[in-house]
Image 1 (cartoon, rainbow, N blue to C red):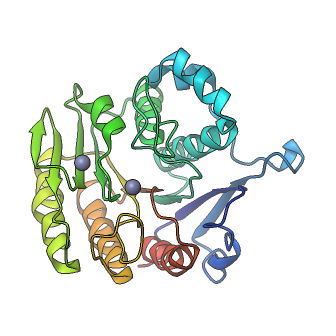
Image 2: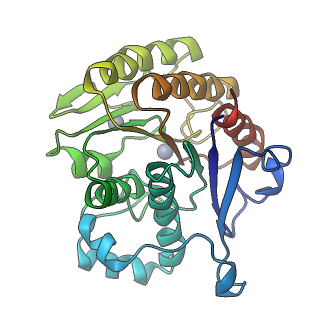
Length: 283
Ligand SMILES: [Zn+2]
Ligand SMILES: [Zn+2]
């Protein structure tokens, strides 16, 4: 039976206000495990999700940048967002779980080695890969980025690392550099058209690349009515989750880490996240 970890920490803000409550019926399953952290309201003893150290942060991000993030007032949220991704990866490697959904308050893909922006401060996937390399000797990873915007931070971090296949789907023209691949999404896409782009641009590539784990930078900001609207329906995300889960089972021992990225609507979060976690934890 597949074991799914849900990584959640308390945060303010509208979009995730219904969680973790909205995962009712999923969290109770015997193959689903909730790892949470509550700050700063609860006692430290309730922190199951431990923050990563400055030492780990500095393996990806410049110390001056980390100091700059501290001055934004969002450091704690950013730290726990990235920590959740790192802990999810560790628990997958130690076989406590098989796949994971990470609720982040602040995403990954606009955070580079010495810059940040667009609601991203630290690059959780990049940090997780460093940790997996150091602790477990893992080597090859693939990231699919289906947030509506270009992942400039991830692109910069991985462009000189051929052991990471980074495939970004966004409005930028298609390009390729050292296993960094950009795939252009048209301004008006259909669910089936986008899925076909994923099959050709990502699923077929990982067959040859053989990554040890898949990371999915999942944004729903490309959904109709969202701020990055490219015409996708809510169902698209569930179909993509099924596609990627199947790909992970075929290629990377089922290791799939879904990292929540862009999207602002609370109703869409409420509608989509339970369905995606249901796919992760399903047979
Ligand atoms: Zn891109
Ligand atoms: Zn975005």
